Image 1: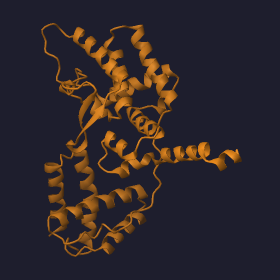
Image 2: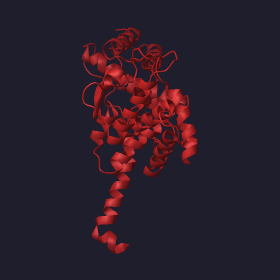
Image 3: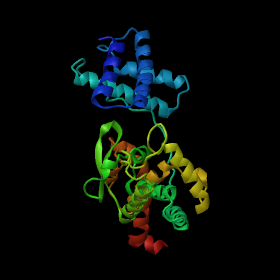
Image 4: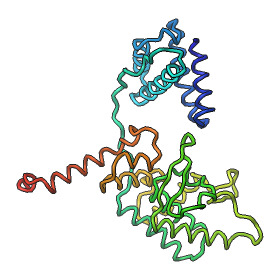
Length: 309
């Protein structure tokens, strides 16, 4: 099979069967097109592509100055393509699976301390107390509570349909990346904030009009609150809370959710499920939290550690 045809077939499958977004398809398309050009220049087809060809591709990328993280991403795309071709019976064995990826240092995710989150929530509550019934203040408070209580992506929060409220109010059914669904639990503060927001939203609605299909409606083109608007409001609230705005974003609250769970003994697999990560290697960016917790356990409970101190 021609390599360009193989790439096109794989991208069609990503779109049709896995519900990949346009951004995901563009990213895979760029990475795999570069690989296809490389193979064509070497006179290779899908059938005779070897591990040596893939290693040569990575070496060329390295000579071109690409970072290890970029090379690792391209190798991941090639692996996925080859696994697809193997599953389709085009090749008998993937030539990419046994290749070691480029070594790279993963930057630690930005996060907040528990005290920082407490200050942020307190600042949001002060806004609500200063203007009872104020819809924007209640909305921001609810969004923050949801982000920190569930670890949802901000795109998942702002895109919540109103029907997500049907059923058990202690759980939300979230549709995440690739159309994958997962259950996320709501704690008491999140449920209380959501109830207050919904009451205010119903009061502000013009009598006789139907509620929006979105949980957080907006007059913008999307019909719902945007990620950018939440980011702006969070940075404004950060100043009131005494937090550097540069340290705060909706995604930082997702990191805080995961870090604080792991720091208090949660299992990495459980956190993976709550975050909606398809692969646990993505969740492993938080292993530094586990390492610090293990150090504390040893220092606090090992008899020799106590003697040394």
